[in-house]
Image 1 (cartoon, rainbow, N blue to C red):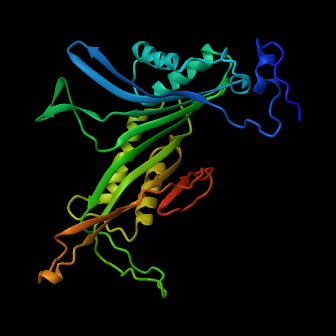
Image 2 (cartoon, helix red, strand yellow):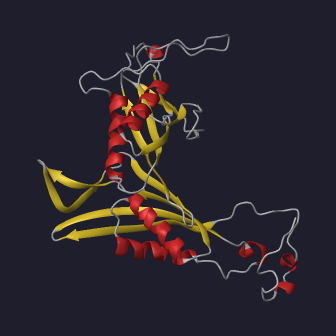
Image 3 (cartoon, rainbow, N blue to C red):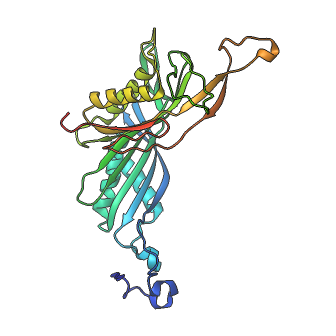
Length: 327
C-alpha cells in the first residue's frame, strides 16, 4: 500500500521527527475529526419592545482533507477550536437564530465556503426550553420561564458541493399515566415470573429523532411542535378517557405512523420509549392493604436503539420507521 502524502517532503523538521519519518504501515487512520463542544450562546431579537430569545448549546466537528496533523504533528491546516467557538458566536450575531436547524445549516455553510480543506462539517445543537410568560392569554414582551418538558435538538451534516442532511428530535421528555396501560399475552415458560397485568402505570422518557427529506421551505419549528403533540396524543389519548396501550411497542408504532403520515417533510424516524417501572409497595407485613395508591420507582432502563432508514430493528422497545417509496 502506498503511503505518500503531499506534505511528506516539505514539512520542516520532519527528518528529526522520529514517528513522522515513516508512516506506521501497521496502523491506518480510518476516521478523523475534531471540533468544539458545548458552545453556548443566547441570541436576543428585539423588535421594538417585543423581544424573542433563543438559547442554544452547539457542538461542531470538522473533518479535514489531509491527516498531516495526526501523522506528522503539522498543525498548519488546523482551525483552532477557539476560532470555531468565535465563528458560532459571530454567526449568531449576523445571521440570528430563527430555528436551531437553520442555524446548524448556517454553521455548515460557513465552514465549507470559508475553508476549502474542510471535507465534512457536523453540527449538533440543543435548544434551552424558554417559554414566554403569559397570563390570561396576554404575552409578556420580554420575560420568559424555563419549562423543561422536552429538549429540542437537531443535527446537520454537510460535505463540499453537497446538500445538508438535517435531523430534528425530542429528548428528555418524561411522561406518565396512571391507568389505561397493560401487558398480557406474552410468552411464559419455566423462567417466567412476571405476572400479566391489565391495568398499570405507564411511564417513560421519550427520545425521538427524524430525518428531513428536504431542507428548503421547511417550517422546522412547526414540524417539531407537531411531532411533540402527536407523542403526547398517542401516549395519553383523549383528556376525558385516555387511550389503552397494550404494550409500549404498540404506542411507539402508533406515534411513528401518525408522525410520518402527517408530516410529508419527514423521511424516516427512530424513537425510544424506555420503560420506567413503578411497582405497588407491599404493605401486608404492616397489616395494610395498598390499593395501588403508593408505588415505588424501581428502575430506569435507558438503552441504545438499533435502527436504519430502510429497515425495522427492535432493541428493548426501540424501533425505526421509514416511508414506503411511492406512498
